[in-house]
Image (cartoon, rainbow, N blue to C red):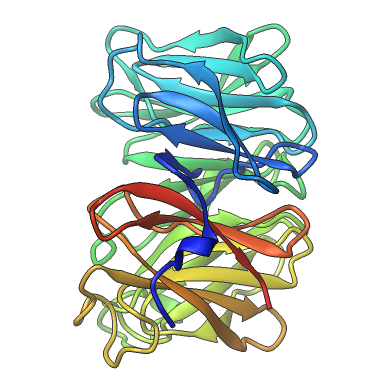
Length: 344
C-alpha cells in the first residue's frame, strides 16, 4: 500500500486538530485546521474547499494553533500567547475569555464542553499547575485543582463532562501515573486513573502509557502502551467505573482516537505497522493508520503516511458519522496536508 496517494489528499497546507480534541463542525460537514501562517481554516469535507476562519498571527507565538470544537455548538476555543479565545464557527468573531497572569502561562491544549458553555484550561506556574474552568457566557473563572507536577492534555469526558481528564506530562519511562481524572465529587483531588505497575508484565517497570483520549460513549479514556515499554503493549481502555482492559495488542501504537459510538478505534504507529520490531526500531519517517474493532481487537491497516518532528504527526480522527478518518500527512517534499480515508 502506497503512502497517501494523491486522491486521498483533502487539503494542503492545513493541519488537523490534536487527537484528543474535536476538530469537526457540529453538522459534520467541515473540519477545522491550522494553516501555516497562524490562522484557522474551515475545510469542507465533501469538496476540500478551504476558507479562513480567523487569523491569529497578531498574537506572537511560535507554536502552531491547537483548538477544540464544541460537539453541539458552533464554537471553538484556542489558547495562544497566554490568551484564551472563544471563536464562532459562523463568522470567525472571537472573544477573550481569559488571560494568563504575568507570572503564569496557559497550556496550548484547552477543551470545551459539548454544549459550548464551559472551557477547561491549565495555567502553569513554576512550581504549580492549576486546572481552571471558565464559563463562556459570563467569563467567570474558577480554580478546580492545583498540582505540583506538569499537567496538560486537559479534556472533558464527552459522555459526562463532570469528569475532566488531565495527564502527568513527562518521559513515558519515568512517569508512572500518566492518567489523572478530576470530578467535583468522585475525584476532587485529581485521582490517578490506573496503576501502571500493576498492569505491567515486568515487575521492575511500569507500563508506558500516553496520548490518552476520553471517549464519547462512556466516562473513561483509551490510551496507548508504547512499544518501547513492557508488555502488554497496544491500545487500552480505562473506564472510570470498571477495571482497565487491553483492547488490542500492538508493538508500535502511538496516538489513538475512537468513533463516537465507541465501536471502533484508530491508531497511528511508530514505523509501519507491518514492519518487524517494536517502538521506534526501524521506524524511519513512516506511520500506518490502523482501525481497531473495540469488541474483538481486530486490526485493519487502511493506509500509510509520513511524519516529521513534534508536533507534525498523523493524529487520526473519525469523522462524526464514523465512515471516514482524517489524519495529517507529510509529503515527500516536506509539505503538510490533511488526508481523508474511507473506513472499510
